[in-house]
Image (tube, rainbow, N blue to C red; front, side, top):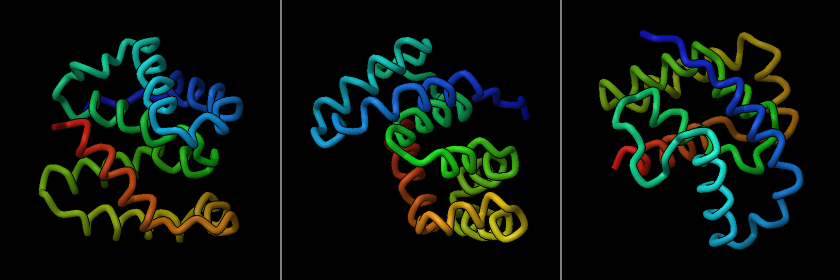
Length: 136
């Protein structure tokens, strides 16, 4: 598997998340912001590449707008990306849920996420929804 370098995308999400958060209330404005960001990073929102890596990057941008940094950091983790890939390849979401929970239980990032009141299972499902929309 080719490693995914998401650092530039995460930097972009972080840079625009704070000032654009109020705009996210209006879905049309949000869509416009996401489309501009995707185009800026050469991730064409109208014709994304059909490979896993491209769809994952696209989903991370789409999902990540306005999200707290710890949850974005979670989806950047190699272990989470691999678990998501396995779940995707095997059409078995329980792989992501099990491995994701195990990851969160083993690292301080899991404590940070839970301290923020974020429900990891809900975030895994939300990310999967965005990912699945990107592959259609």
